[in-house]
Image (cartoon, rainbow, N blue to C red; front, side):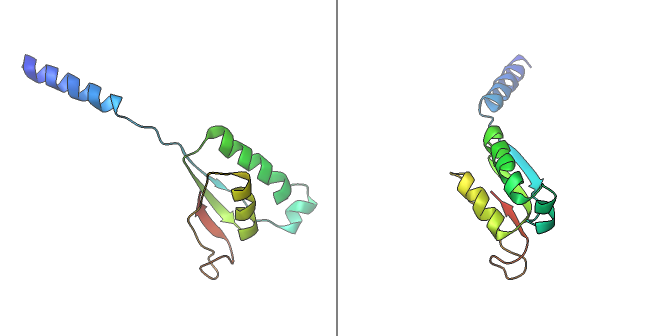
Length: 102
């Protein structure tokens, strides 16, 4: 029993020592609309804040919803070191909302 307890203890210690942390987040970016811009909450106002939050939290994976291609380009320009996976829903390339993983 003592040997089993010692073995279990060392196994548990080994597991915690090898543990890694993955920081993940998701956000509804909200598409770029003229109506939002007219109300003062357009993409040009939201983009710097969103990118600052991504950099500050140093997310390993960031899911972005309702992203238009121009928004994706703006975010990638502001976030060196990030890449993306995803396609536009309208044409399978760049047209329409694009759920993306950065």
